[in-house]
Image (cartoon, rainbow, N blue to C red):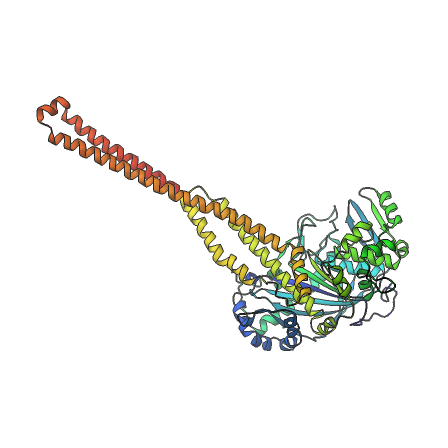
Length: 594
């Protein structure tokens, strides 16, 4: 058990071994911000803005040179994204997080319950700050640091931190309220959202309500320092009656792993300062030579599935509950527990005890380093899942330098924040393209709608398409390490795959629409040629008949066409028929066009 769980005085010790640095990042789309936000926070006047907003110049002078050490962010002589501070002590404040004595989750058709014993609130140091993105979007970052021990209680607590922003492996109770829920729901019937609380100044609040209140406080301070208009860029009010800034600015989206749940646009970054973790992930033999993780795990039996967990799982059967009591959790050796936890945490799995050897080994494959020669010289290991970027390091100088200002490593943070920006930029681009494709697919077979659809494609190319390529962050990092990590993080998030899929679908529909529009033009040309031909034919016929009547002697005419009135009728009928055909064809064309 950790000191806090054992009842000893709780303290926070920074910059030491076995410390977790967690940054929760919320993304605010540019369209959700006040209409004049982008103008007032233009990168060309960022230094003026940083002078106005609390201690932002101090923050800039400490952190942005470190950004520039590893990345070439300049574009057309300007760095277009920048940091802004919030009001308060830059060293942050102490908050406490409380979790239940029993952690419950569901997976593979069974319920699990880990009995941790009495859990005292855990102290964490917290800092907040802003990041203004190149396209005028804004992100809000809440950084926590926490000293932990290598025991089951702390590992489950850390796993819950990741679950607060990505709560998979949890289902809502069958007798709970129906309908969709999100972090704004007064009583969310989902374990992490309902049971993890923040204690501050004798007050207990659910985690997301606490985050919302801090966001509201800091956004009021930001907008107050640089006065904003009352309307968003999309025309909606920034602060709607009866709602808060957090609810109106931070978009919630369906969380696919948990049906009926909507979560804020948020991503997490974790940095573990832990020498034991690094030795486990980059193992060495007794004589100091590098060995593979596979040899280490199999050689020490660290991936062996706990037999007692297997037995209890089989006894529980489908739909049953598997209880992991304190005695069972304490029976797992520290080395085994570390490997189980690392493998589970990398994949955002709280059910980390319930793993087979191959699952452990697969989950320990990092995004960096990948090559044996890189492993030999590396001093950190990095992983990624769809919603978190994770670094394991020991005595990382950049982490200690950045901790006093942003609560994490600036180098890792820049990778994290640019990848997050690209992800949501791509999602917006994907949605805009999908809306356009749906509108076009529903167009009727009329020339006007084909033309309108083609014009929408032109407009999309001029605005959304151009903005996406204008504002997407490229791989601006100077060094191979950061370049590889950024590239693989984007691959893990599926960013480029989404873009490729959007553009392939978009191009196919656009080409089809333009082809139909071209065919409609050809049809119109042929149709008008037909109408003209009818008129010409009628006119020639009329002239021929009229000429024949004028040049034929009366006697001959009488023998050819005894009734002159019939000739006139024939001429008139021919003209009326041609006119009717032409008028009807034109009317039909006009109806289809409109």
